[in-house]
Amino acid sequence: MSELRTALADALGPLYRIEREVRPVGEYRLFVATQSQDGSELLVKILPAALSLGINDLQFERAVLLIGERLRHPNLVRPRGAGRAGSFVYHTRPFVPGTTLYLSRSVMPCCASIRSSMKKLPLVVFASLVRMK
Image (cartoon, rainbow, N blue to C red; front, side, top):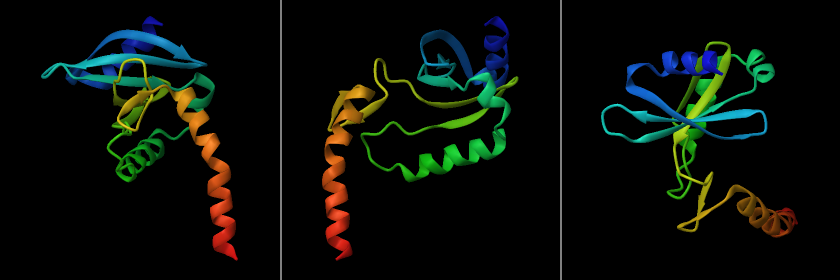
């Protein structure tokens, strides 16, 4: 763990300081970093080692930035960037305590947002079938 933390600190450079690790999600490791100048917090999500080895970090960074540009909804947390810390690939976004998504001006945990989306899926399918006729 100390090797990962050291590599991450080197990758983020002098702009961010690694503060703590938050609960892991599956094999992914999550760290909170604080910006040195204004104190804003950044969530850094580290991909698992097996997955990191098969990813071109430059292509991954470009894809993350392109996705960030396309997410225009004000209630979604947009990714900030990506990179490589030693042998691990990571991506970042602003840190929002206890959540992964914003929806309808209230904070909604990821599982609840997925359940909500799944309830709407039949309506989307129906609407697309009606348009095809």
